[in-house]
Length: 416
Image (cartoon, rainbow, N blue to C red; front, side, top):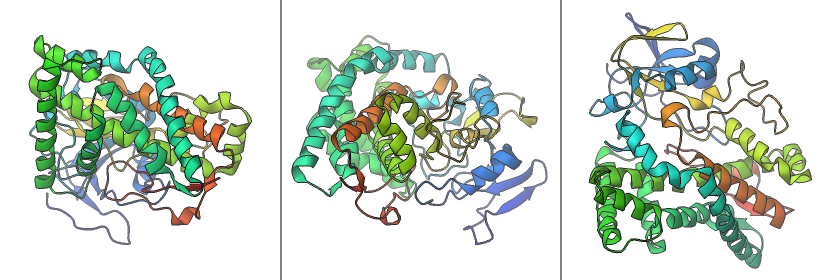
């Protein structure tokens, strides 16, 4: 099917596929601030299992948006991530972010083996031990902010460097190399760079981690990368798997936490009543982070697709063997049948079923506990150290990232 071209003022383009109904062309346009994607909002209420076509790739795919349908689909082993390899499924980027052979594009038993190798690094006990060190890093960064005096730019002062230092220590990436990794991150997690550009960066990343692996094999340290290198040496992990796991961990940690923590701060500062409620009692912070994770549309479009290995009926719709399907965790977190007033931020809500911000099923995000912890530390440190925290410019003047997979403020000027 040929590309339908740009979206006009009339709204998303649709075209009829006689065999499978209407396919919605979804360009995944840039959305300002906290605006929720209007197509996701509509499909969730009117067509929760829909056909879509994205800017790149070939053909069409299903899109699931309802909370219970997504939980069912992502728990069903009849949907395969591995079958997406070498298949040009319609997508929102000209390149596939997740590497071939990586944990994101494998099925059991390989997926189970890879996940087990890194799960210990991200379990709650290890994250709890890392919290003390994370709090010390946050305090040092805020000390520098206070020494400088207002105004300050939060993404460069705190929400960017904090996850850099935390993941650098956890994985064992030398501090001097973090800037290089950040540059690679900006290309890989972009929807604007070409396939050639992204492939070039992927080759550079692979070369970097190959060199680091050789060094760690000779000089092991007390870090996750050394553990993975040892697993490779013992035959439990191939060299491509070692590299892909390392790339996934670094890129997700650098990008996800920076954007989520920054957007959480912005959201609270633009919802003063909610912020005042949180200031009253710091023990409310974990529940507040869960509601922020549910409410904030932290990414553009969708993530990795799956391929049906046989005919499967979900939400009353039959997805045929060989067809691709995406899920939108953002839409699931706004499902009105699950969350009362889903489009409203409410830190006090009592109807709190688990949000799906980190996915569901076998591919649930390994770094969920680490991300939650760092977001809690960022917000808690700012509440304690900068009680007069506020935006330094009108909210409308905040610049937001464009052409990226993950959403967030490009800069966040603050004062106190």
